[in-house]
Image (tube, helix red, strand yellow):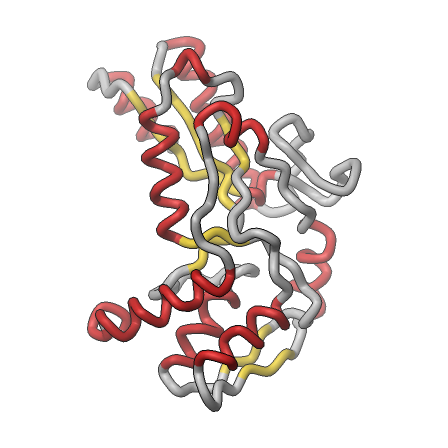
Length: 223
């Protein structure tokens, strides 16, 4: 991230949009939800690195005038996810079921992890990038995705209703489950909604339907 920022400075690139994460928040969040004013104390190295990226971008904006903006994404769901992560079971339970393979979720059925569909995430990046700078106050924004946040069990039921014979089971990993239980709280994304008009288009059912459509129409892409 530092190299990108420095290259933008040297080459007079006017704008950088950074993909940050809800992983920049930790377990000591006060209240029942968190927003863009909540103190960020990440638990993981990943979250710490993302927070460094945010602060570095903020410095380049103040010092060099770089138009730096970022989105703190929740779990991003979509077809073709390959990078391991605590919240990727949403994507995998759909894709593995569609391919006729059994899938075991390493989280409890009651687990609620905020997610956003990849197409909503991409649209959010474009929308933030085109927002007039004079309308922005935060510059680094949380966004919520699928409303309301479904449990892992609810998602599994939606998949089973669409994929006959889908074999989805649950075997929570104790370490991962503990992390999810501590970190995940509802997201208040009012600043993104107010300052640049963020609003997700895909709910849980539409997300699953579109992933299944992608897998059907482009099987080679996700082989």
